[in-house]
Length: 265
Image 1 (tube, rainbow, N blue to C red):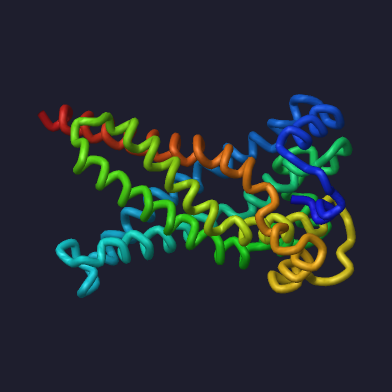
Image 2: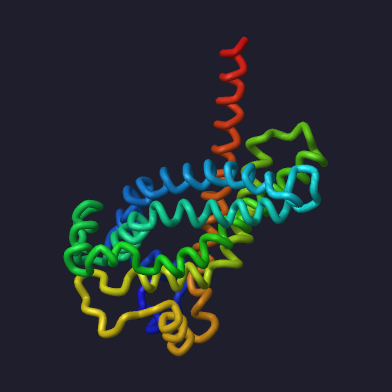
């Protein structure tokens, strides 16, 4: 994620993992984990909640109702709107998470609240929204693809094998949807992270970077492959995390529905 990553020539997951342990210690793998959890809770809740509501609203539009053949369009639009909604509301936490996770041996930001106050002091409130444009460009398609692929795979699986466990179906369908969405939107996510790190740790930025200038810098310094730098560890993270998220959501929804049914009885 660092802008000086172009200086690396022979990099790999093992090489970077070894470097982190050597320079920062084993605990560095969990750097920024608390703010990740604080960010994930509202982000995931808003995503799932708003997705269902956007789907219901879209199905009220003529031509997109439940009986039409445009179910794929409804899923894509609903997912895109859900992603934009959740990302917009929780974005400052995403910036703080990135800043905390990418600190090296010197701790400029001491925690969530210190990071928020320091960013506001050094860069103004706007600093908490650096890279928001790139995020909205990426997160809309990302969540749209994720939800659409997930629901399509789950529906097909349940038609072919109706007696399979909901948890298993959700886990595998979610994992594949995560791979699809990450592959499609990884370059935009990389641009977003680079923009979030501009001005980090009190470093003065010589010019105001935009999405266009950040893309141009990556292309000039790293070439086309630079836009997919780090895609392998992204897959290693996304496959279990997205799969577990969908599995947990479906399992809890089923459990809560059964509890409501028992309560009515």
